[in-house]
Length: 549
Image (cartoon, rainbow, N blue to C red; front, side):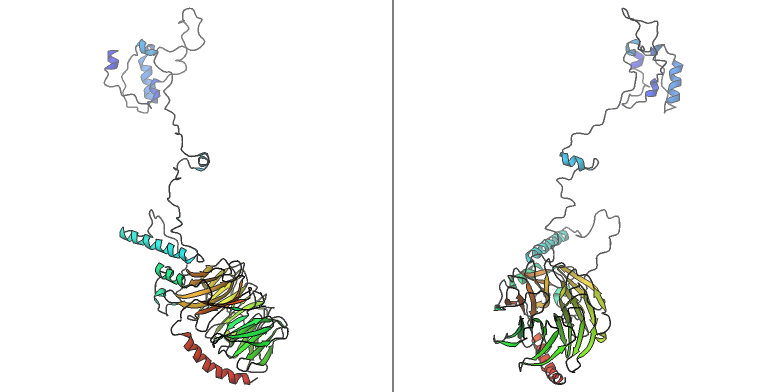
């Protein structure tokens, strides 16, 4: 016993010890038949083996053959009889590994990963609404708040010496960024466009701009019996500050300078479907639902001629380019007429659109024009090849394309708006045919016009029909909403046109009201000087040309 306790060579016993050092075979577990307990029969279960009676060479042989440490020397010891009963027949089992009770609820236990801790109370990886960029059609206050928060975040990061756009554990190359809008206003040189296009307007400028948007019209005129048809164009503002409007079969002219109004003509029971001033403001073209167009002289209040192209359907849209008049029919055919000659038709393109053409606009330099139809198609044409195919056909819209506007300060930029099923404003580079920007307005778009505001720069104003009946203003190229007039009319806005100086928007709606909104500032060099120059030059030229027919 003393030798067992004082043996310095016995290694300490570990929980995961090698059980093969005390290897016991089934033969060793068989009981000795000569040993019985008093008062009992011989037990059927095996007896414990007397390990002390075994020969030492057997134990050493087993340990050397099965031990993983072949060179380990263990002394041969005899176990005292008092300890024989304490020898277990099998090695002790390691303690069972049990999970502690989780703090997760029953729904979370079914979805949580067993190896990943729960981040129920963590905000990592979550996008905070305050830092998210608002949609373009959000209120101006939302853009101001978001941009203010972004500026504060950049200031804090700069003070801490950090980069806001840096990433932690960046193991791969960043994916390519989406194409950014083109800087089509770089030649203008105003400070808004000189900055990066991805940046928003400064909160102070945006807030000041939003305060200037009127909540009520500057003037309201009655427009009784106006035809509530989205595809018609029934109002136009001339370069000489005269407004013409069609009310069923009657055409009225209102002088915005003097406030006088007068009846120009009646169309003998034929509904007026479109109206347009000539470029110099001397003549009015009136499209009717029988397919004809009448040209009237505003000074003499006389009809000069009637143009008929063979179509019996209404003329929903037409446009002037000097002496050239381009119109679209309900069948989708485009006609070009020279008003100087008696045989006026000089060009025709049949079935360009699969449905009614409801929008035609010429570029300011006259080299291109765009047409939009109820077939959701936008086509861009080269004036030099009128009888050929359009140079671009765009099918991005999901509704009728009626609203179109060429940028008066950049001839390559065209914007187009879709109807109820589309509700988007697309911006196009007509030199390459690529789309450079997109705005989702969440409302039907009936007209688009360009304007200029001090401090923020160039803007696009859109009039809306269902469901908002509002007027929205968007800065370009940041696409940030700078203002909105909610419920501008009691029903959908049908048309909108700009004043010759580019400061006032006139809108007409199905509620039989013609409203005037002062939205923009005068862009210098002012358009009034340009209007005077164009009026003096082209007026004389058109006077001579109209006499030749």
